[in-house]
Image (cartoon, rainbow, N blue to C red; front, top):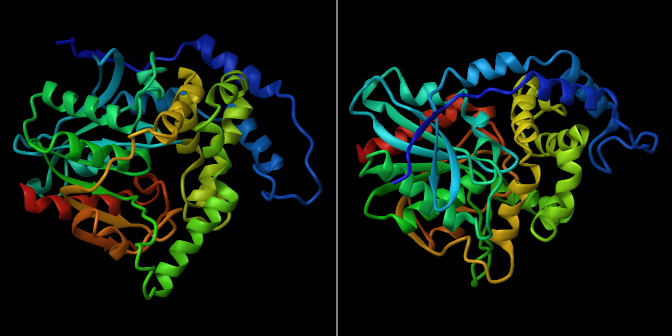
Length: 376
């Protein structure tokens, strides 16, 4: 069995100076007058964000905040896996593995981990395990083919066993939702329940049925996503290596590639900062930049979505809870999902979008606590 090694987040001064130089020396494209965000990331906003990243953003403060948590690395299936393992002060806390997605990192969970490990009621406490997906952040680039959501789920279930947890729950959004579902599929003897904040399905064979206004709005957002917002997915699922050159060499390129999604996918008033703080956004992007994983993270799309891939899994019998946030990019009516999922808990949330743990950490933490009470 591979060792579990303590890990400290520590970026060199040289890497910081290189980032700042690249941002200040960026070569900018043209932009049509009054184009706004219609063609993609708006240049004036990206220029201001780049200036702030270079001149005002405090990586050392973010690094110190990350290092307040307990970080480790281990090797599983030939891959380095970084993870936060934050044990509650309450010894009977319930183990919970939480998985992020793209373009997220473990930074998504900085606000929610403490809410889960040290809640007001000790009976609601969790020991939280938050891995960096293979190919993402401090896990580093993947070393071989095949790291889809199924292989990742198997690695994460092995991690839970390696940590000594013989019963636990899984939670996630985006890729983390699919990984959490697949943990339930591949480790049903130990993973007792799955909670997600992202779940989608197409209409059943007998038709969509009568839809509420909220369900129609959710499907409208899904249609908009597939017609106007999924170009990144087509690139990342077909030619991620071509994209990798720009993301790895250009800090502005990496910045724009992710910032555009935070504007499109959050519940905001027209600005990213109304949903997620500028510093938190840049800490998330910084993890991609400093670890040079913009390209390797994109490979998750290739491995999971390529023709013939088994990365999405089939029906799930493990009890499932769903927190449905109103501005999620894709939403399906509950009845479309019930043939394939054992849904025992469903919450229609008041506010929030795709990055729920960053946008509405208190609401998400409360829903996770409520769902898992029945399994303690």
